Length: 332
Image 1 (tube, rainbow, N blue to C red):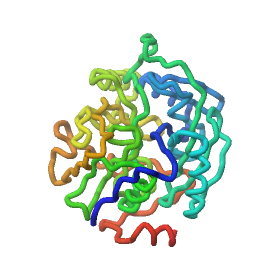
Image 2 (cartoon, helix red, strand yellow):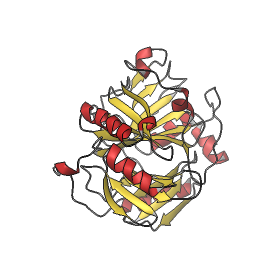
Image 3 (cartoon, helix red, strand yellow):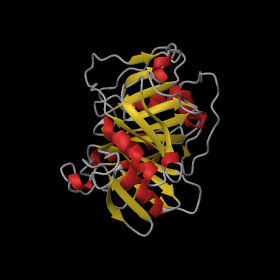
């Protein structure tokens, strides 16, 4: 089965994965973890929410934590579009395809659109946020892993091939994929901003959010984040790494925050923004794909993830789904 083609004139202009909103039980514990271990900048703390951004980010937030008495959930994954006109086009696009879509009033964002995609992912589109001072040269504020900026979000879905087709129809480019051949794809890496990925989809029970990732400046910041975690009592939250990825080649560490949400710190990777760059296929039977060096992940890294608020998790079939995207959208 051939891979989908790049769409150069998408229905609206998505520019990047920009933010994520999660629910947590204890804002105090979360604040210590994300400020001191991950090294994010706290933009605003309210009675029921924390708003963080990366050290070099100028927009108001890339991580929102909202207090909840229920089990931790992912409320939305945020995608930026270029203009408000793109939001209007996005509303029409999703409405035509029968996806739940509504305008939303969201604090510290401009015009905002909430969408549930055909696979149950809760999406939040916006084009503007209030601007804050970048902290890249405020060296006294650099802590822990010194998370610079939101880079990507990894998601689990039992409809991997259909998700690939759908998101490529929105203008995402396929940069890398994990598969023994093109008919048995296990993971896809999709980008809009010019590096290997903004959204990553793996085959699995879903919809669920596996992890979100911030870029760290250098390898030493990964180690400093681990040391800080240990000093502050979060040592058991270092789940995987340090290690090096096969796809993307970045060095990484994965943490679990106090509520179990998974976050990755990694040093950044290469550019891919030219049409002649073909997608790179990684063979899952090659050990270097999963871990060129370092210890392999524990089973929970593959099995545990954060459910979406309001979406039911469906078990993944071990065999690829033969359904076409058009039929799936009609039957959804």
